[in-house]
Length: 240
Length: 222
Image 1: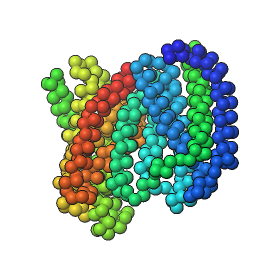
Image 2 (image 1 turned 30 degrees about the vertical axis):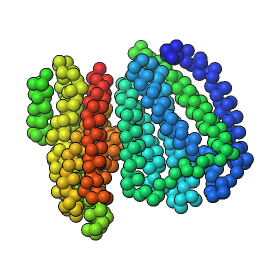
Image 3 (image 1 turned 90 degrees about the vertical axis):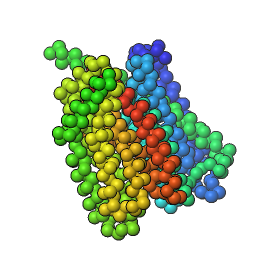
Image 4 (image 1 turned 180 degrees about the vertical axis):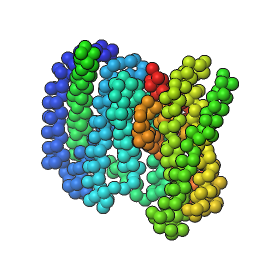
């Protein structure tokens, strides 16, 4: 891990890997979307709307995964002083927020024909919404503090405290939901998912994961460039 | 060490009492909420009774949040915090003391006043003791989290809105268990589990937030 602490080494690696990741992403999406929209069967109960699932479920997974990634990267930055870990966490946050939003939006579009309403205060929806708020708070810290090292130090704390309290929030939201409206708890488990749908879903999940990696690397690359620009500008000012 | 902490506590309580703590503003805010709620949703007493406990919790959360930026701001700006990092005290204990001061001077008084104010929203009198117990327990967690928010935004000029965005999601567990203690779906004894969990959340905040606040302030002071 420490080998890639040098931004130049990281850039070399990222430049080599990125085209491959993009190609894999496009191929996976081509297969996955073909499977999702054409070959996979319509659900006997939900009809064609079940196809939203292939966009919705992986988005939710990546939305949650990105927070875990962010927390681990922040911990690495705190413990090992790994200079790229902060950048990785910073780059992961907007991606996570967007995937969360995607999950909420597709869920809302799916919910309208299925449940007859755009939004219910189901435990899962609520905690996804809160997760998005946590992302926004984390992003706001980077926005509000100009000095990158200070912003990194504060953002680490925000991410780590969030990761400690997140399970408690999740647990209390579940509790709250069962206490208030047990009738409207809508769950996917119970009906085990059919194999013809499962493999498409897994391909889509892989596609989303590689997309996340590709976007993360691209974002980190531009972050490194932005930092270089900043130091260049600062040294220019000092010279003049 | 104990003497130093006591001196710090005394100093901060005194400063807060001389008008720096924001209790007056927070209290007025709470009163305004109590007046505005019936105007917003109508004077129907049955509806108000159902909402009263939740609304008072909401008012408490927001009122505490309103004062969060004062916990460290002034000491940060005039350099007192810098001095406090140089004492023999672990800085985590300093931030804990600051949070405790905030609890003693703002959150606790608000938590004591909120349930009787709820009577104006037709709060069921039977709920009153439980709401008191829940609010007194939960308000400590609110203060600790508010101090964390204050520490995270200490060096920012306008941190108020950012504190709300960062800390309100963290208030959710306190809010949920605070309200669920008072709903008493299965009789008064069902309040106990909620109160216990509320106490557990408060204890967790007691452990986590002073460390995180100290780390954030040290980053600003470096």
